[in-house]
Amino acid sequence: MILGGLPFLQLDRTGVALLGAIAIVASGALTPEQAAQSVHLPTLLLLFSFMVISAQMRLGGFYAWVTERIAALPVGPAGLLAALIATVAALAAVFSNDVVCLAVAPVLVAGCRRRGLDPVPFLLALACAANIGSAATLIGNPQNMLVGSVLGLHFADYLREAIVPVVLGLVALWVLLLRSVRAAKAAAPLPDAPAQRAEDHAPLDRWQTAKGLAVAAALVVVFLFTDWPREVAALAGAGLLLTSRRLHSTHMLGLVDWELLVLFIGLFVVNHAFELTGLSAQAVQALAAAGLPLAEPAPLFATTLVLSNVVSNVPAVMLLLPAATEPFSGPMLALVSTLAGNLFIVGSIANIIVVDAARRRGIAIDWRTHLRTGLPVTAATLAITAAWFAWRTG
Image (cartoon, rainbow, N blue to C red; front, side, top):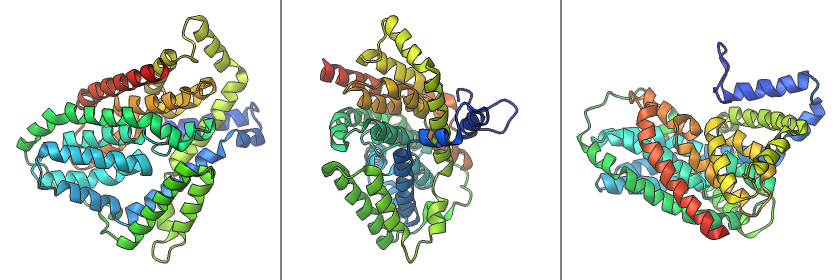
């Protein structure tokens, strides 16, 4: 997981996690039945359901339409940056940061080219805003879904806890990128983009978009005001959207990120086997003996930050969930693991998606370019979050 693969083998983190789970079952450390029982089904169902809902929005042309409207706004670069950050953050809080970046990035590049603007600072703003905005809710990204499902956090309670650092973090992002976007007016002409996928520039289908928005809005209301299990409500919403006369289920399911679901399954199995060894409990005890008890805010904050940048945020959250025993632990895990993802390109799938979309369109965003934005943004947002928790828990 640290290397992102295995030397000399064509494997990514999903392949590593899957092979790890296979090795554990094949070695007899867990039986197939025990491995299946270690998978947290509510988290997988919630992930799958929102992937289907986001597929509806992509095929209905909603993301492309919104991005084109933003790119056409009669405002300067600073106003365009503010509109982009606010819109992307709001979308990511409901429809997941990865999906929003995947759908918005190609259309944003085209819009910046039409305006004669360098797309790089706006693409970096897209990735950072999606990550920050997704931290606002328990459905904004995979690790938040995991934290909310496993710890049984209430949707509204978490939103109240997260909204202040998220909003202040978005303001900090806008301030930190102002200089870059103002200089973007003098960008050199960029090469023409290659042909795009149909769903990236699908024309707006008002009926399909309205259906998707109605289901998403209904689910948010259910999450806020009822105790109906989130995964069951979301699955019902996804099933409703799959019963369509115009959008074929093959197209809808083709946009589901099956690799991410496999990654979660593999990590659940590996993490359960690791817990059975007792090593994780011993590590928690050793940290406490060294004066770093994870039941206190500062040690948990620091450990989450470090682990999220070493093994990425989802495995880090899985490792730390058993230590999340205090009321502040769940919100802190969700916020810090998400905001830490802005530091490096590999810290978040959303970053990788944006960088890859830029590369396919002749735009280079290397790790140094990203770090020049990611480092101050991560430092500012985490400082805001630390101050918020210090005030809340003090």
